[in-house]
Length: 342
Ligand SMILES: NC(=O)c1ccc[n+]([C@@H]2O[C@H](COP(=O)([O-])OP(=O)(O)OC[C@H]3O[C@@H](n4cnc5c(N)ncnc54)[C@H](OP(=O)(O)O)[C@@H]3O)[C@@H](O)[C@H]2O)c1
Image (cartoon, rainbow, N blue to C red):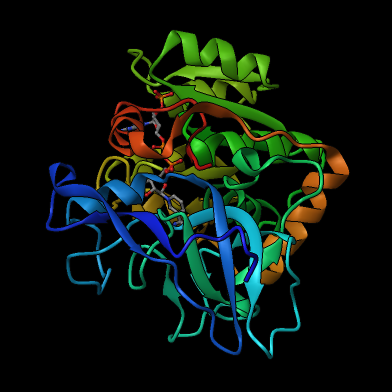
């Protein structure tokens, strides 16, 4: 371990359900085991699910309180265990959202940082070397921290699973982290993108980011009708379902025959419903997405460097202002909210 590493650090802990029970504690800097890496955390990007974890509402976290939340880190390696081969001191790294999903099918033993494993809202964390990848060269830590969950989810849906092609039309719902990565990655692949949003200002900003068309999801004309009209009645090739509930029915109606819906989000409701009989004829492909595996994150990192993709950061808060950052997220961010350390 480098001499500059202090033996104590700060770490956020939620002692029981509720953001009012978040405390910034002192703790000992952990020591890496044989296959582990000690990382000095430089940035943690927040996800909608972090609020659920802190409020004790996220499904299947498996972690009793007290717990440290947060899943997505960018940082620097400061020490490595004796048998670590993937990283060296001073490497810039990203954590993987899933600890233990390296490639192929999702393994049942995989767990989530800041969910079923301790999270990363701490000055230092020790992680198994398999739970890290090299960071992109083209991004700083604040930007890079947005890739492990939001960025990878959009990449996994569009590219790893979706086989996106130039000329297709993609629709994303809202202007949060996953939606804007969907917009940027789809544009980078030569697709057209439609964004639905309840905010006039955010619709304007989505157009500036490269959306071909924006839809007011609160308008009298349902968003799916507006989307079909925009495509001349053909329908959308690929939709990110980010809301849930009856909104899935709207997504099915907006889709082209044989088009794809990536089931990703539950901003509205967990349970989802859609019209079955019309679907027999329109043949939607409805596919669940659970972020993605390490190999896909490594491919996303290469793509980000290749196309100079710059993640959209709505706001960046100092580490001790985590409660303000969470409040920002709760009110709906345009892109990502990030906590910066050091
Ligand atoms: N399955 C997975 O792998 C996976 C991975 C990451 C996230 N998720 C889930 O995906 C969803 C989005 O995550 P995120 O991190 O991108 O969220 P986020 O950054 O918090 O997105 C919030 C934005 O979504 C829009 N929105 C909020 N409530 C809405 C509603 N009821 N109807 C339509 N739009 C609404 C708003 O945009 P406007 O103000 O522009 O309307 C808001 O700014 C969450 O449910 C999250 O848990 C799933």
